[in-house]
Every structure is written in structure tokens, then in C-alpha cells.
Amino acid sequence: MCLVTLRIAVVGAGPAGLDAADALASAGASVDVLDRLPVPFGLVRYGVAPDHFSIRSVRETLAHVLERPGVRLLAGIEVGDVDAGAAVSGAELLAAYDGVVLTYGAARDRHLDVPGEELAGSIAATDLVAWYCGHPDADRDAIEPLVSSARSVVVVGVGNVAVDVTRVLTAPWDRLAATDMPQHVLEVLRDSSINDVHVLGRRGPAQATWTTKELRELGELDGVDVVLDDLHDLDLEPISAALVESDRVVARNVEVLRSWSEHALDGGHKHIHLHFHSRPAELKGTERVERVVVERTTVDDQGSAHGTGETYEVGAQLVVRSVGYRGVALPGVPFDARRNVIPNVDGRVVDDSGSPIAGLYVAGWIKRGPTGIIGTNKKDAGATVASLLADLEGASGTEGDGIVPLLAERGVVPIDLDGWSRIDAAERALGASRGRARTTIHETDALVAAARP
Image 1 (spheres, one colour):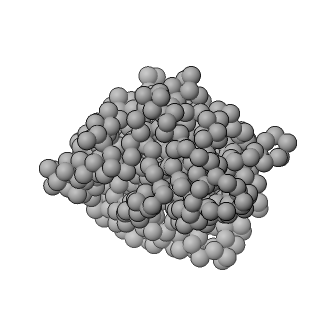
Image 2 (image 1 turned 180 degrees about the horizontal axis):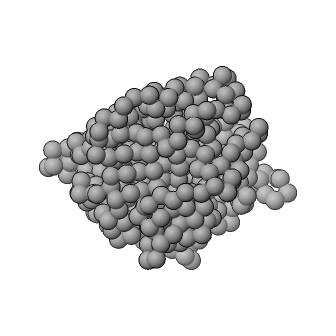
Image 3 (image 1 turned 120 degrees about the vertical axis):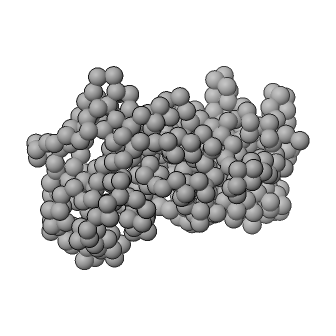
């Protein structure tokens, strides 16, 4: 069997998808990488904070995958319900390829499920991050008035995304001006009146999921003081003390917090307030959020948080929930609505009876949930590809040019690697005109126009 005859479709051009394409190309397969957006790289482009230059540089490595012989980019192609506007269905992909690997991620947010969450000024971190990263789907009309008019913000969550949001909303102008943020984002943040950001964690500091590097960055922002809301939060419960003893990352995180509690404030005009053992109980306001009712919590011996009934209020005009990502279903593909992932065994998608669906595979966050770091995807995608290659051993391969002929019949023109290269050049030129390395083009129409010869 000549593996080069195998033709595989990978749905999603983020880290998981490109890692899968890399592994498949190394095995000699021909790979089409589809993405609904006009550009590749997924959350590396639209989820990693723009001021994290080293992490965002990963896309240069990912770009090399698209340059490999046998790998073809088909961007701007949505997979789903054709009657609802998608370019191609999952069933059509399965008919055109020997195998299909779904890697489209988990980009939706989770809700707080508290009274008042529907008020204007209550938004998801996913939406705010999409806005400041220049995602084509970002709702400027909804986000920008809120950021422009807020003086105090509550961020719910103590993971890296919550830290990113907090840092971006309080960072000094020179830090942001060096990024590739769209110009309109920079202008809104430059003129922002936000002086206080309150970060709520429902459990103690030992249970926070941020990394030490991200946490320390909050204390390195010029003109910004980090304040622990209640120093008693550093009095660790038995389970928290055990975590500190057993986990070096947790120990370092707690040590950073202790060092901040012992230092005099620098007198910065902006403040980041860290509230542990605190969860939002209600958002109050008339036409928009004005106050957040916060309930104090305790942590039991299993690490679960429980409300105490003791509450206090924090004034805020903007509430950003950062309590996790979740995946969404793809029409015609099994979905576990409880875990918000595609059910699978070793990357093989399974139906309700647990039987594998021939030719259909999954990798990345939509396979395992929103866990791990960018590098986690490589091993995860490799495991899925190993299952696929084992299943297709001895297969003769599918003839034809994949889904491209069907797209042509429908008048759909995908953006290929040359198109992405033209977008890349246009963004670099736009950045150079403003004294920056790059400025992100955020509108779909502008991206498509830049892609065309």
C-alpha cells in the first residue's frame, strides 16, 4: 500500500489541526486543512493575548506545516449545514476523503447562571478576547461602548484567560502599542477610563489555575498596583496546604501572592484587586450592570466551594466571565452535551452505541475539552493520527481532488496558502505604516480582498 494515495481532510487550522496535518504528511498522506475563517492558526491568532509575543510566534512554526508537500490550505470554508449557508457538509467530506479529522476546538463560553447576567455590561471573556485579537466575528458595536464607558470591571475566574483580560484592560499604552492589535482596539484601550479590575476566584489561591509566569506579569505592569482583597485568603485550608506541599506550581503561585501582600503599594493610579473565596451571586443595575453582589465561600476537604451566605458588593460597569470554554456540535456528528465534546475512543468518533464511525476522527479541545497548553495538542493529535493510520492500513486511497471540485460547482473559492501569504504581507505592510511589525486586519471582507491576487 502506498500511503501517499490516502487523502485526509482536517477540519480546523489551529494548533491541533496543523499538528494532525503534520503527522499525516509525515506518514505520506495528502492533507486538505479546512477552516471557516479566511486565515489559519485558530486560537494562536485569536486567543493568545497580543502582548504575548513569544507564544504568538508559534504560528511561524505552524506556518511551516502549511508549506509541506501534500498539505493544502482551504480557508474560508465552513463545514456544517449546507442549507444554512455552510460550504460543505460533514457527510460530503466523508464521501470525498479516506478520513476526516475534526479539530475545530471549543470557542464558546460558559455562563455564570446568576440573576442579572443578561444585563448590558455582562459579557464573556471569549467575546472580549475576540475583540482585542481582531477576530472577524467580534461584535465591535457591543464591546467598544462598554469598554469605553467602564471605570471599574469585575473579571470572574482565576485562569490564564482571566489574567490576560485583566492585564490587557490595565496595561500601559506602550505595552499595547507594540502589539498587532487592530487600530480601533488600540484607540479604545488608549482612551479607556478603567482604573480598577476586581478578579473573583470562588476558591482559594491554591486552586487558581493560572501559571506563575502569567500571574507575575500582573505585578510588573507600570502604574498598576495589585491588591489582595482579604489577607486572610492566604491562610490556607488543609486541602490547600496539601496542594502547596505537593505541587511546585501552586507553591510558586502562593508565594507570589504572599510577596505582594507584604510589599507597600507603589501608588499606581490603576488597581487590580484579587478576591479569593468569592463568587458572583447577582448582577445589579437598571439599564446595565452597576454592582456585583459577591458571596464569600469556603472550601471543603474535597476542594469544592460552598457559599456562606455572607455577601458584599463591588461597583462595576463591566463584568467579564472567564469560567471556561465549551465545544459545540457539528450537524450530523455525535456530541456529548454534558462534556461538550465529540465522543470518541482513542480519537475515533463513536456513535450512541459506542461503535466507531468509519473514517471520522477528532483531536484537540473538541476531543478532550479545553485543557492543556498549545504543546499538548501535538501528542493528542499524534495519538489520533495513529488510530487513523491503523484503521486505514491496506486501504487503496480515494481518487479525485477531495472537496475542491464540489466547491467549484458551488462557486466557492477557498483561500489557499498563496492567499494567506498575501494577507500576511498586507498585515505587515499595514503595521509598518504605523510603526509596528503587524496590524491585524479584522474584517472578513478585507481579509478576503487581501487574499486575492
